[in-house]
Length: 563
Image (tube, rainbow, N blue to C red; front, side, top):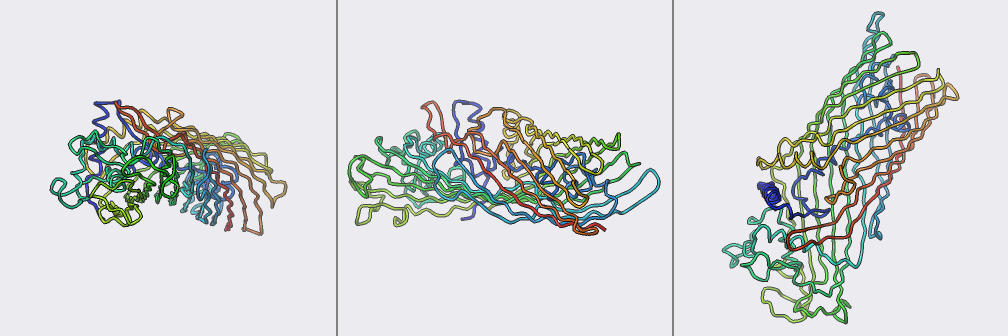
């Protein structure tokens, strides 16, 4: 089902309503997947520099003051000026992701993938005897973010249902169930009457999760087929796929072997696809169909499931400039600035739901139980759930944080080097530039970044030791701090803190032929989050609080040739 619609109409209305009544709100992992939210933009802005060549990965990307490495083009292009020869290399990588949530596992919690971490070439275009010692040009690809991971979990004993959120959404919007149909409730169902923001709420109605007891009273939306004595269990599965890669065109210059300057134009390729499966089961005391018990209701819901899929893809453009100063032979000081990346993205949203209920006392002519008393969205033509697809003109534009990097490194003759980097990323400076509706909703987004986000601090340390001229041993450590002003973020989760360790070895195989191997351990953690929550003047309902950690084991190999 294709929809071309003003996607942000409901968001703007919700923002306006929240401004008038701040005691209302909803959020969580399951919510707001129909539009791009501030957290989605922050997540796509989380590019990191622990990928690249195997040498850079082993040293945790601490290359702001180091150079003569193809990773420099995406970190500090001044490092390109340190080449005194031409270089070409390729770095394939295997990633093994393992996830853990603070709840019992349900399904798949691992993801293995082959990818390209880096490929590039540096050309020594000029060698001189004056102040300009050399000029180098480079082109390459660096992987900047990995979105490949799975996590799933389950929990019993939950009292609230996601139907509580959908009921409040419809109530706040003043929606009657008659609005879902043509001719004021007497005609056929019409999805064109329903904004994507309310798709899942409408699916909840069609799947028996919620109902409106009085069509003239929006406040009467409730999970009417779930008894007060019900015990609920639920499961959640999330699959994420995709990455951010950057193609760079760079130039670097060496001035008097003292100052190195460089600049890069970066063009990023962005792709992320998320699948979210969520289900609830309801248990009632006593005996009943399939052991579910009897709720005492005319109809009792046995289970309800929701599937959502979101695809975001597009491009980004940025500019980088940097300098490295060598005050002494052994000491290097570096600095680089990355302009905000301007992203232009398209977005697709899809959802579907299913439900199964049992008729203890069949009194409603609008539902059709089978011979055994079951009512299913699969066999009731009035309740069959379509696959709702919004693939209209969903163009989004925003700018990512400005990044500023400082680095210092010290070389110990020909035996080794130690390097330290500090990076500051201003997430509170993310700004939306365009959205599909053209509505004046930018202030709501931008205020969210100002109020809820802050600058994130990143530290990277790397070391290299050469016991032999043909052998190098490397190690590194990095830490990326949270971009949230508060430790707990109840909205849709994203990774806020990342720690990574690296180790590697490098070999000189022959004249101009190098082989580097790196292992990297990366741990990314979310703040605490809800699956769903809602509150208003009638009270609050929410899921349990969760946190997820994804641990990645990356193994990379670089084969390089110097000429």
